[in-house]
Image (cartoon, rainbow, N blue to C red; front, top):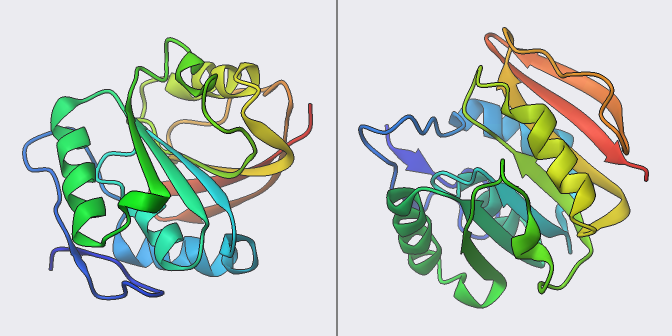
Length: 186
């Protein structure tokens, strides 16, 4: 079965996935569990999808009523796939795609409208990218106070402590994948 939007306005819409890359789209059952947890926070959210890959998480949020989404990835093929998926769902007016290396910094967000209140952070597993990515996110001044950050990571890769400016509110484990939920409290 291919990659699909699992809920909301675009439920059942096929999305393009990326073959032969190290991109690992979040499985449908994991996305469903995640969005069940976030259900009350999606409507009207301003979403930031970091290491966006196929764009499935941000598109799922838009399908369920998020106001807007910014997708950031550094791979040309991933950006092309995100663009095609956004176009297929007719979400161009509510989306922005940025090519950027999240590990370097998030200066690409400086000119953007700030106030993101829901962030998906899904770096490649077991690369040690979480701490620097979270630091760059905190330094970006792009988050609303109290913003929810969801980190998807391997069970083998823990969350480095401390995460300056973020409080871990909970963690949910699904086999080898963990969702860590953090609140932004500068």
